Length: 596
Image (tube, rainbow, N blue to C red; front, side, top):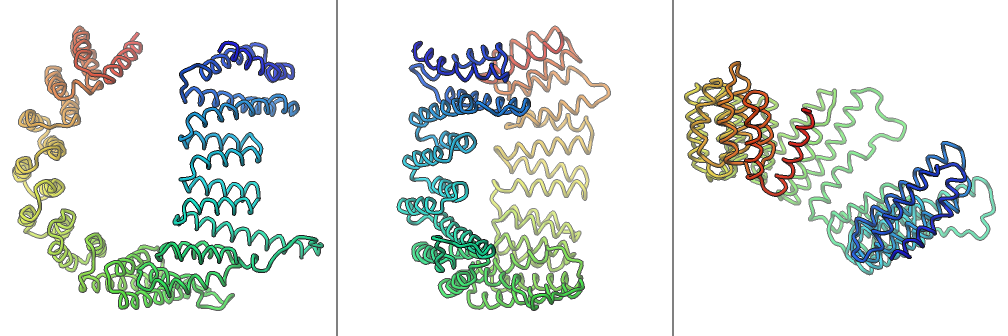
C-alpha cells in the first residue's frame, strides 16, 4: 500500500511544481498539500474503506481547485491549466468512479459526482456519468428527467434527450411526471426550431440542408406524446397538467384547443374538469384587444363580469355533478376571490354575497365537509354576523358531534356573542366527546373563565380538568395551571399549586423551570427553595437533562454555596446516561474555562 500511495503522490508532483513555479503557492504551502494528500490517499487505499474518507478527499480537492481559481484571478494568470486543473479534475473523477462503484446504491454520491462534473469536467464526460448512473438507478424517474433536461438544455441535444425519455418510459410506462416532462421537452424543441427558422428568414440566409418540417414546428411530436399518455394515464388531473404545460407555448393554440376539448369530453364527471373550465373564464378576454377598461371602476365591473361567468359554470357543475367534492371546488373559488384585495366596494359586496350563497346551498344539501363549516363560521365572525354564525355552529356540531374543532368553533361564537350559557355548553361538549381528545376544550374553558369569572371558578375548572385529563395530555394542563396561578395570585399561589401537583406525574421540564424562574423573580429569592425545585426536577429528568445539572451548579455558584458544586457534579456523572453525560462534561469544562 505504501508504494501505491508514494506513486500517487509522485503523480501529483508535476502540477505542484507548476503551482510553485508560477507563484500561485509558496514552498511551505506545497509541503502542506503533500502532507494532507498523503493522509487522504492513505485513507482511501487502506483495506477497510469508508465513504466519508472518499467524500473528504473529493472535498479537499474541490477546495484546492477553487483556491487555485481565486489566486489565478488575483494575479491575472490563466496559463498551464492543462497541467494543473485538468490533472486535479481527472484525479477527482477517478476517486468518484471508485466510490460510486463501491457504494453504487447511494444516489446522493452520484448526484455529487454530477454536480462536480457540471462545474469542472467536459460535457462528454458528464454524459458518461449520467449513463453509468442510469444503468444502476433505472428505477428512479427523477434521474432520467434530470439527465434528459441536461441533454436538452446544456448539451442542446434534443435527440439525446428524446432517446433518454423513450428509454425511461420503457422502464416506467405509467409515470405521469415522465410524460409531462417529455411533452414539455418536445414543445420546447418545436419552439426553438421555430425561432431558428424565423431568424434565418429575417436575415434572408440560405438554410441549405437545414430541414424544418411543418409537423414538428406545429408541435406534432408533442401531440403524439399527449395522445399516447392520456390513453395510459387516466384522470382529469393528468389531463389538466398537460394542458397547463401546453399553455406556456403561444404557438401551440391548436394543441391547447384539442386537449381542452378532450378534457371536457372525457372527464365530465370529474370536479377538477369543471373547476378548470370555470377558472379559465377569468383568463378569457371579454373586450377586444386594445379596448381594455381605462378607469378603476370599469376594471372592477369587468372583473365582476368574469367572476359571474366563472360562477355560472360552477352553478352548472353543481347541478350536473352534485357532490361534496364539486361544492368544495366552488366554495374554495368563492373564498379565494373574496380574500383577494380590491378597492371596489361593489366587488367586495358581490364576492361576499356569492360566497355566503354557496355555503348556504351546500349546507342545505348536506354536502359541506367539517373544515368548510369552520371556514364558514370564521367568515361570519369576521363579518360580525353573530346570529347566523351561531346557527351554522349549532348545525355543525349536530353533524360532527365527535369533532373537538367543531365544538371549539361553537364555543368561540358563544363567547364572541357574550352568551350567558357558555359554561353549560362546555359541559355539553364533554358529554359528546371522548375524554382523550378534550384537552383543547379544557384549556379554552380555563382561558375564557380567567377573563370572565372569578379566580375560584377558574381554579375549579383546572382541578376538574386534571381529574378528567390523564397521561401525556395532563403535562400541558399542569403547565397552564402553574402559569395561571402566577398570573392571578403571584408567587405564593404558584408555589401552592406546585406543591399540590409535584407528585402527580407526568411532568415537563418546563413545569419545573417555570417555578424556578418565578422564585428568581422575587426580591427575596431563597436558595433553599431553588434547591428544592432543582432536586424535585432532577428526580424526574436527572438521567437525561444535562442542562438542569449545569443550571443547578450555576445557581449554587451565584446564589448558594460554591462548595456544593463538586458534589452536584459527581451526582450528575452518576445519574446522566450515554450521550447526555458527554454533553454535560463538555459544558462543564467550557463553564470552568470561562471562569478562569
